[in-house]
Amino acid sequence: MNATPQPGDERPLRRDAERNRQRIIDAAREVFAAQGVSAGLNDIAHHAGVGVGTVYRRFPDKEVLVEVALQEHLASLVALIDEGLAAADPWEGFTHVVRRAVEMNVADRGLRDVAFSSGGGRRQVDAMRDGIVPGMGQLLRRAQQDASARPDITVTDLIMLMLMLTEFAQRSATVKPEAYRRYLDLVIGSLRADREGGDGGDTDLAVTVSADEARAIAEQWSEPRGNR
Image: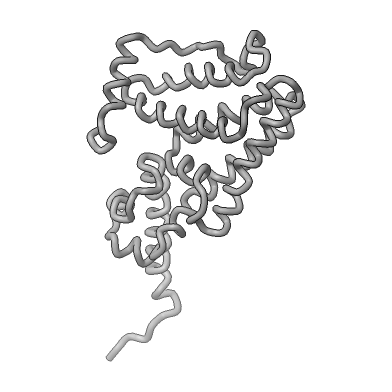
């Protein structure tokens, strides 16, 4: 004789399923941060401690998982740009956003991959991403109209510089994690129209990189990513 199902019988299973879903999302954030959004669902399943079939059942489309995992971080970047645009001093607002955006992208390769790529995303991710580059352009134009930023710099230049700094930070992380900050200071200083006026930030080339550290970083750069 079969026992009569009780109303609460399925609840533990649903709770387990929700816990697994959250484990997958948390693992995806960590894996995407370390490897970028090119990481596979197998990597995420392994990091979450669940079977890959569980990941595919919850997220059959990887782009859905990218959206869920990175949407909050993208929203933080959009909010940062809004904060910079609201700053009374255009140069202060501009440099604050550049610094923090680079720091955020250094900490999260997945954010960098999504924030400055184009297409292939979900609707909500695309909507946020589509506001990032124009927002950076507005910040730059405000600083140029204020005569504090060089007039010959374009938003494309700015994005490329930020991507280069992020790549350098990833390559130098095992030698000197903070080394990129020196070059971030140099880049920001080079963007100022009056370069004798400082960079508007809170450091003045505070980080140094020795010749030995530079050689070690160069060695890291020459190694394929998979060997590090």
